[in-house]
Length: 184
Image (cartoon, rainbow, N blue to C red; front, side, top):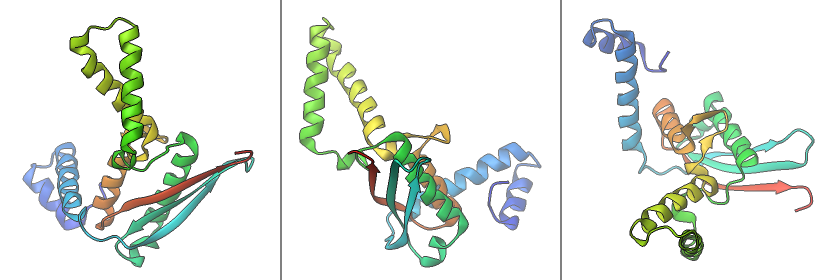
């Protein structure tokens, strides 16, 4: 049910006195803690995946890296890469991470939002919080890792990556993507 090993499941069930829901939550927490430890490791293997939408008018290529070719060949990793390519086609991100957004783009967006809210007569004392909220929404639309997953809107892509790291036991990094559309 959780993807954890049998012995680990047994130990957690004993610890939680048979409470399956609590055991599943504990296994998930342990998996996320393990995933956090793996984030700094080198990920130089992986796949280039693709997705071509019905009608062949829009397509995406993505490079997703992991640590070994063994993990890259697993069905779980291959499905994950395909889902990321589908996300790029469906959600049209411009950047992978917030750090990839050029500073001049951030400042330009911030200035536009600030002026927009000044024109609407918003009080100066709350203006910065409103602008930061709007900027957060911009990141959610423009940055792949901040977007809600198209197959499950309750999960962000960054959370999906963390889940895959925990499940597969290796660091996973989305490096690049490109989206092609007929006529553009």
